[in-house]
Image 1: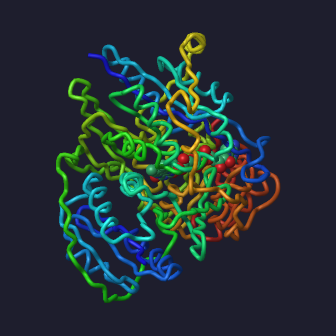
Image 2 (image 1 turned 90 degrees about the horizontal axis):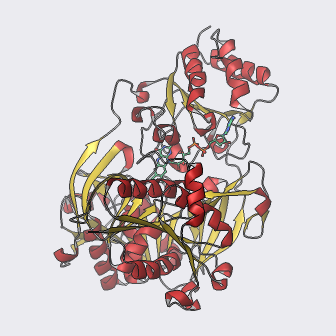
Image 3 (image 1 turned 135 degrees about the horizontal axis):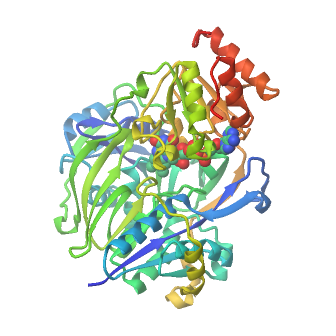
Length: 321
Length: 266
Ligand SMILES: Cc1cc2nc3c(=O)[nH]c(=O)nc-3n(C[C@H](O)[C@H](O)[C@H](O)COP(=O)(O)OP(=O)(O)OC[C@H]3O[C@@H](n4cnc5c(N)ncnc54)[C@H](O)[C@@H]3O)c2cc1C
């Protein structure tokens, strides 16, 4: 039996989910009494394979095709590799690029797909744990099939360590260029600017709970009173109320301040990815069940429009009227 | 030359702060239904393309019960030209969690509509599966791009120059040959509110309902090895200290804490 896990890199670097998927893949392989094989596609495949050869990896298959991720190449390569090695489980990272090829591979191989797994139990029928309704509930999803595809949520499994004794072999695949219909023409870093929220010791971070752009001066006044920097969740930036360089999260900045005060932020996984390393997390939220409560150290379960003005006053500031 | 854009839309439920689970879902009393946030941006993107181009038709498609017509009408009110709703008794009993099933159903619509471009949301806010758009592309043999936050569409060449929003503030610039499925990320545009005039017009726009038969499908399409078997409130992993009291009391606790930590002076 085989578990095949696909790794990920960008601009010359292996990405962290590549090491986490080894841990998840080993767990699954142990449950299935299977070998763990890794797929490395594109870029410096030999260097990557060496670095991925960690405890628990039995084999690494490399495909030296292109420098960067291209979903057509990944789809063809993973599909061909799966056809050759017939894995019982195919693991892919639940990253932006993972979601750009995993459904296509699962479709091409006719495998059932479950995305964004946070846990699984593979003794018997595969039972996958995943979240729903923005993390307010968890669900169990059963997969009744001999073989399946799964995408793994980043940061749920620890990165694999140690050194393995995997066999590293090139895998031959003829990429059908006529089926490659997308071309990556470049990359661009966005979100730079005058303020660097990653440098701040104290962040006051505002979310959709603020409701209207007109209410933003309230949290600005709080940040001023505390001598803190203002940051935000994504919807505030999507709405154009704050510039991109203020966004905390998966597609924004990763911050690690001494104190992070989340005001009207629910704590979606993509937000938490950017702030869970903060020393102290304080949540102000009307919803006692909001996922942010799971990672908060201190919380006030109340209306921000009542609490924030009081706070501003405590520090000698003045709440805007 | 005319262009047809198909936009998939889903009605999703939002959960009240306090709720109860009954069986495999949250009790309906605690749910409020709305157009999926990501699809709202997809609809807006399509409508903007139709306003900017000549002869662009925007068709929305949803998989959903009669209740979802309210949501579809919102998409029509915002400027889509007509709507297709797919529903069947056979679908009512299926959980419709499996992206493959959704892709199979939507594929039948794509095959009959033959759009030049399909826009979907990155994910649905309720089950966050995030796979339907790409699964659909694979199924119908279209090219695709996931998590698109900027689109420059060349209708004559049917090429989409997109930005894909990767992690950590990096964007990938990619050219995608059509016909293609693009999964649209929030923030790509500023979704409009439906105007009163738009809402009135929406009442007169065509909304066709298709059962499995009409799409040349049979009930086996809903057979899926992927099954939701339980839903529960996660045990809180947190050990947050919750400051209780009136706003001035809780604010005082927080202020004291910040001062003690030496985070703020004064
Ligand atoms: C590919 C991808 C990338 C993403 N990247 C990011 C990212 O980088 N950063 C990010 O933040 N998100 C990101 N998201 C979006 C994420 O999934 C959530 O949609 C988003 O984080 C929600 O923001 P929010 O918490 O402000 O809003 P909501 O989830 O709507 O939460 C608002 C909160 O405010 C509370 N509230 C409402 N009114 C009040 C009040 N009066 N007083 C107190 N509390 C109140 C509510 O109880 C609720 O908990 C991404 C999503 C995807 C799919």
